[in-house]
Image (cartoon, rainbow, N blue to C red; front, side, top):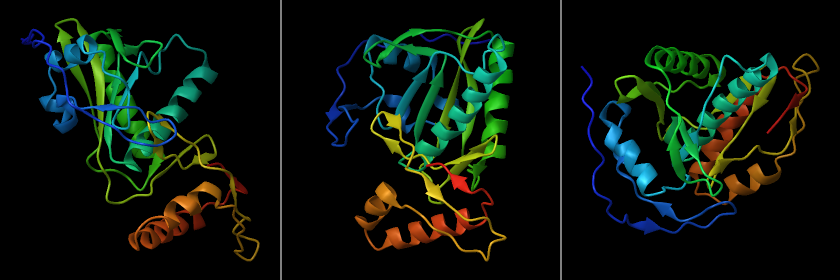
Length: 241
């Protein structure tokens, strides 16, 4: 039996301003502090009734990996999914909700629910993709279906605030480093590596990544060192950021 909880009364949430290029006012919502198993249908309805916007910690997707899509679109979805997870992990973590459509201002607008069995299969598929395509792995990543009604579900992913960043994703031979920038992910500029067989030499264009890491505290040196160690093993000649 699935317990359906009615939406709670609307309470104007507190807001916090943040300041980067694609940022907007961050609205506090209860799910921010919750693991997936603690999120209820009422929490999802709250996002819609409050017209909660996407932000650094929250993203809405109407659908993912729809089996009716052509193959190239499905492959794009897979690459986009793992890049999104990496972006949240390389920032401060957050939630991705699949089955919740945003409006033109990127605010929670309406449900696009998934049938129960399909929601379970989608959650399993998304979790498997993250395990296979993201390095280093994230042990605390959660992806699970949540019941809205007995026959309607959405899928929610909770990406942890990773202490093992930076993370990178790869799909179909393309490796990406994507930090979260405001309410969207951002691909860092191209970084080129010589093949490991050519005396192991590398050349790189650090661009925005170098500026970002150099602005940080001494811990950023550790962050940068991790990044270099993880990309040394890449045998591709063009690593896209």
